[in-house]
Image (cartoon, rainbow, N blue to C red):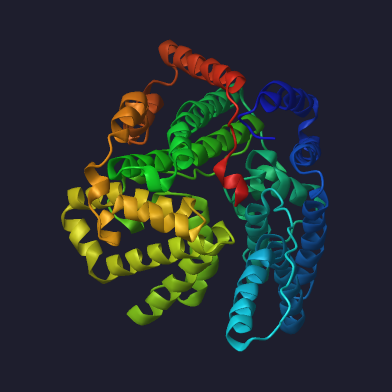
Length: 475
């Protein structure tokens, strides 16, 4: 079940909110925990057991770590056991077939060259459990903080389960650290103003997803159906920008809806985006895009490795490891690893010298981001490396020694005529201006009417459309 679905908006959410608010405040965690398990089961009933086991096992191991503060070997044993379980589940379900495919490639090469008959390993074809990448990182941070001594273990299994399963951010984040929510899990109060703000934020997120992401997706889908080898260079660039806006408004819309739902329930969920396409460098872009994921990697991988404290070579090494893992976290495919390593190279170059250039000339940095980021999203989007190469040769015809694709077709004119107004809206709403106007005037009756219009127009498009998935559900 997704937030931008009629079943969620008109069935699950109203029933849940009624039950939540008639429940006494001291028992609302139980209602939220139970409702979140039902929410997850409606979308992924087979793997509900995995998230329940994660709660039970990590609750027990967290307590075990805390019970032996003066026995470091035993503490480390419980900690390692928890990490093996948490990341082991992620590895099994998300990466097993990826590893098998690569082993089979090596076996096929050996068989071809040596004339041997080594057997091919069959793929397991395990379905990816919804949200496993997100809730694994959340529960791992909880265990790590207990081991470090910066967080006391949660003794109530219902409270820990509420933290991990809270449906506003269960499936696709934001990735919330336990210490950020621990006080709110103990006591919270929802005022009428908070609830109203939550509804407004939810409506903005719904509009971002349905009216912008879903609509601009139609262009990207047309290009995929047409075939990458049949498009002109201008259309290839238009498609790259279209996918850039799709993935931004898709994930930004989900995050806004998560924040809005959290506020309606009395929680402050951290923001996940801060106008990333207004960045002036790649480093700045990643301080604005998927903020909670970047924070997780910084706090639990980069800084423990030494960060930038031990010279440039160590810093480069640490960046390499972080970005290789960031790419792999997003998906079990070589294109995601290439995508992560590309960002490693770009950020390393900025740390060495490019950052100083962009700091002196921010306009040049903005221009750099505007044309670079869409290329990185193409690498992110196309999992088949041969198709990816084809698309890159359409973006950059010189890669295959050709220039015919620059002027050979007029397909981009039709695309601009059809989607031009939508591109203008996407550009506008990816800047800070609309958000600033909303913050300053959100109680204005005209703004409230506009939000009502956004909500009901979104509902109209949900009724008549067929495509409505969230891109980050597959990660």
